[in-house]
Amino acid sequence: MEQEARVRIERSAVIPADTINLRGRRRLGERLIETIVFICGAISIFTTTAIVIVLFQEAWLFFGSPEVDVTEFFGTTTWQPETGRFGIWPLMTSTLITSIIALLVAVPLGLGAAIYLSEYASPTARGYLKPILEVLAGVPTVVYGYFALTFVTPVILQGLLGKENVEIYNMLSAGMTMGIMILPLVASMSEDALSAVPRSLREGSYGLGATRFETSVRVVVPAALSGILASVIVAMSRAVGETMIVALAAGAGPRFTFNPLQAAETMTGHIARISGGDISYASIQYTSLFAIALVLFFMTLILNLLSGWVVRRFREVYE
Amino acid sequence: MTVAELSSINTTQTNGRYAVELQNTHIYYGSFRAVKDVSLQIERQKITAFIGPSGCGKSTVLRAINRMNDLIPGSRLEGRILFHGKNIYDPDVDPVEVRRRIGMVFQKPNPFPKSIYDNIMFGPRINGWRGTKAQADELVERALRGAAIWDEVKDKLHQPGTALSGGQQQRLCIARALAVQPEVILMDEPCSALDPISTLKIEELMLELRRNYTIIIVTHNMQQASRVSDYTAFFLMDADRAGQLIEYGPTEEIFTSPKDKRTEDYISGRFG
View (cartoon, each protein chain N blue to C red):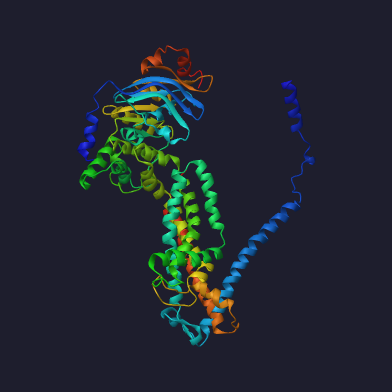
């Protein structure tokens, strides 16, 4: 039996040379798929490039116009397009203040939630909690905006600090609500980073008599630092770019203030409000929006580059 | 804790002949019985090797001795494991305290992503270290010397422990375990990820450590068991896939005149 089989194999190995054809067949399906995925990739790159080009073009018109000079733009603290005063600082500070408040809310809560999910929660609890957390990320931002305006400000802030101390539009309320909005992002990304820390490191720590808390804080979190920092930076750029919450709750007028209980319009809020109104396309007010957008673009670009650098700088490589 | 307090622990370990005693221990993962009815007594300041084919429960038994299995959801132990005459599975026992007295070295070197110095000081610090900087330096040096790695790392104590070679990392992990001054050190196949020269160094180190510590080692390497251990326990899976202790005795007897046929078959390489 075995011998027979072997004979057959040996025979079939002898194939006349002229029947072998190594020339490729035309695989049309393969070509088609390749073209389609290339077009998909190209469209997204093209769109991004086009947006940047438009931003630069319009901003160029703004900075080129006689009413504006660059030192005034970056060096003064009044933004009043009606009177021709274009100092970006009031918009920038309120953007930064609301974003920092958002981070102050989102980072401790998000990291805490991530540590709970990855180090403490039973698999069942995690199975329920993670989807719930992700629902929080799916709430439309306009809902958050009205939540800030109709609940956080009047009930929480004015309730705690007094009606006379808290303006109805204020940066604190918008920032806190934005913090709730980006919390799932921080929690989810940090949880991924913590879960990626190998079990062997945790065991090493427990084996030395560390408690769960000591293991989490002294071993797992430092080992996952790069991912955690990256989540913070991504959350920051999300907060800087967030529009609806700040447009609804932070205030509708540029104001140079560092008091979070006061109203002040952010960069995104300003762009949303002005472009929603009736301004003519040729006006300096219109092109000024592109200048703000360009600054915003560079802020998030720097944050993204920073996040890439942080990930590379602090990454621990495990097998 | 200070250096003096730490080193005093070791000298108080003279009561009784056995460091650890397992009495009718059964270990379960959920409803699966992984280890069935193991009873054995581990002598102080000796090296005891657990040998047996894969899946025979030897690592599970080892990890039960410092309650590492607690970290696996669904694991459960019946029977008793005595340490200083106290059942470490009694409800009033804190597993964290057990693990401070019974240290562990793992299969794959697992230094923390910290400096060599901080790796060593991790244990003392979480155990409430209150010594001075000079005392800490001394403790680090003693632990590293104890693990025979001081000369190789003394000039780079503040470099990350993860940058060392595999064998050095494993000795760093041993040093890290020594720094909390345990009485017993459990080693779960400590050389399986290492080259022969690093393995030899670890084996020499174990013989050195035997003077002050009780060592229990799980190994797949039968030559290693016969080279370093004083006692050998042979485990085997039974028909229900539960690990059982087949034979336990002085290493020389186990390797030259085993009483059980299965032990003889295993050590002569007929299976496993």
